[in-house]
Image (tube, rainbow over all chains, first blue to last red):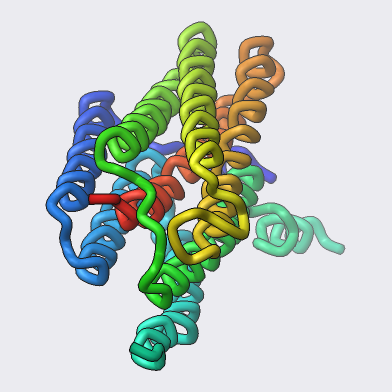
Amino acid sequence: MSEHAIAAHPETPARTLLFIWLWLVGITGVEVFLAYMQVAPLLMLVILVGLSIIKAALIMSYFMHLKFEKLSLVLWLVPALVFCICMMLIMFFPDSVRLLHLRPH
Amino acid sequence: MHHTDQQAALSSPWSGGVSPFAMGSKKLGMWLFIISDSLTFSVLLVSYSYVRFANPDWPKPFPFFNAITFSTMMTVVLLFSSLTMVMAVAAAKRGERGKAVPWIIATMAGGALFCGLHITEWFHLIEEGVRPFSNPWGSPLFGAAFFGITGLHMTHVSIGVIYLGIIAFGFGRGKFSAEDVEVSGLYWHFVDLVWMFVFPMIYLMSVKY
């Protein structure tokens, strides 16, 4: 394998990394605040998963350098993962809500 | 085979002459592992969400003060260890072995502290009567879901601390390259990333008011 075929990434400035880290801590703070405010469970789940996806995207893009990898890698890995997770959600999750309605009250 | 044919064969993706996605095989291997491990955690978290919503008597054993503040502290510790790992990778890429190793050790300290805090949390719940298949408050599935998911994550953190120890030792002695540090960094950030889903879904969805 030839060494020159491996791409070198530009170094991300420490200030940018610190800025991203502060964003991650800030979003965590928002999540904790939502828990303190007693938001309804299903709405809470949707908001928390949404915020967690934003945090995951920040970590993958900057800390894991995915932003600086070849686009083909991102297009190979991310849609496959998203597809599998969607399949799990489509197949399983609606039943959990349906079960609630089947319970005797 | 003619000389030009040989050259053509070596430069094809099937002969090892070209690095797929312009990255080293270790890094690509780690990315593939991360994607497969993401699916393991996804299955657990989707299953957890299922039982969480299908059971109206789901236990809420975490009071805001101090269980949620405590787990928030654990989250910040793990996030901080990701920042030190980023610094380690940057120093390693610059060839500054003397700076990279202390950053890796700081990351390990963050991981060890996280595990210590988490074990404390576990013992606290065990003292309150939570077991894998029973608890004093409601759906018996809570214990299995909590210990299963957080336990698997803590196993990943523990393995990460050992992995980073090996990398710090080897990199400090010049046996490992900057790419090895970067690959271990990918693993560590993944462990952090998983906690970004586990913390809100397990803790913040079960707050006792």
